[in-house]
Image (cartoon, rainbow, N blue to C red; front, side, top):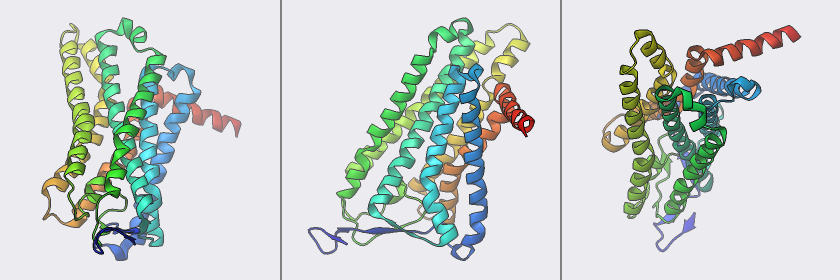
Length: 317
């Protein structure tokens, strides 16, 4: 333990990750659905990334943004994998203080990036419907890549202060976390000192990223709906709305579990710890599992690319 000014105030050398409270005896069985989810996440998102990379016809703004979304989801899942499988497969519940902060940093950084990509995709859909003739002139490839770089840099810069702020807080022996990974809303309940700065900065991050992104997504879809209603033919309206179907599913898959987790952390002090853990798992695992499936089925170009990829492999065999 690292001593501070008082013998009771110290930084713990390790944290204890509970996994799913009350189901410790069933961890080996619980590992099966987690392993299946990781396989779906990495295979599904990896397939989409491979198809977009190898098919030059898909080197367009919509699909490049989809590739960024897949990268962010792979990043979130890769950040949780060591501790999740460590707990459920091998019973390793301890994680060092510094490694926990690193994991927290990467999980939240990739989550912020995921939210920003969903916003960029909603703007992409608005431009495609509102001004289809100028679509490629407005959303050029350099602008798309520049947007991706800005989103990544913003995520890193916003998250960088949080680990440093946590290191300056006294934990007074509290080191048990209620999830299978390190999340800031969970970590911030452990210190026994003044956490007002951490709370203010955490609230700033949430409002300036998830809050602002979700508001702008709603505004984008309001503009999209207004544009679609101005289309004279019913067939034209249907085609325009169909191009947004996959993205709407991705937005709901991301924001609904996130809102549920936020509500539980803020107001669910008397809610079962088991429910806390399940909602946190839904927040981190539901979007990267669902999105590759949705985009593979509902997006014709991605579906054709996947079919073509497997047909070529079968022909080689």
